[in-house]
Image 1 (cartoon, rainbow, N blue to C red):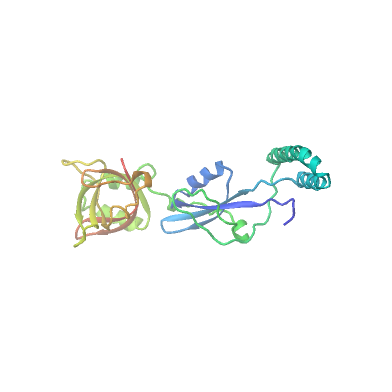
Image 2 (cartoon, rainbow, N blue to C red; image 1 turned 30 degrees about the vertical axis):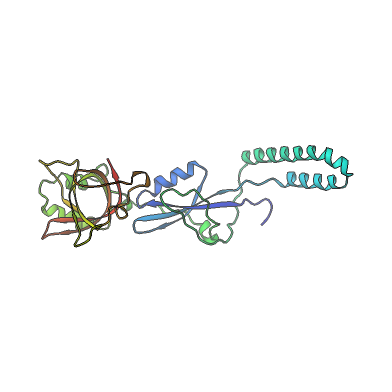
Length: 275
């Protein structure tokens, strides 16, 4: 690689489907440039890069020349002059970094790497260099259908959560139209029972809004056959000691099927938080 070409460091981060634009904007503010995006069923992996600062050639040559000259001097003179040489090298590095920060970066081809990934939600360790064909790709645009549906951006979801009949045909219609999509809403646990004969897996009934013993609206949502520790995907900072009836939650989940015979609307949890 030529000395005037810019070298890059790379990192790969994960984002919930529909939140890619927000994640990309966050890392762009810290100087990272998106180069590729790989969409999964529930989460996407976005690869970023940013230039690696390096010492300009002229200052590197100056430092090397000073070391060579120092070696030719008598030993006692080397001891005295060595401190001045170290100071000059440090000054050269500082000036070089300042000058580089003021200049425009020149893009260069990426090196061939092995792939890497980092734990969710927000990794900070740089990944190895991405393949050159990926470096030329632009991140895929987030399509409207990939957005997480909320009461703010979806009138259909708002109407669903306000429905007074949990066996209404409109609930079946919503499930058929949006199956596989991701929704987010404020909900609460109305019932919680062991799944089958298991002691650590449950069927959890979710209602819309805050818990109430006297009123309810929206479908009878259900998380079926889930472990409360691992399957509900609580953030590390919000891991519960216990969870049960009356708890108010912020639900992010993938739309499943609606069962006509039981009037249960199945959801697949993506992320759960206490409110």
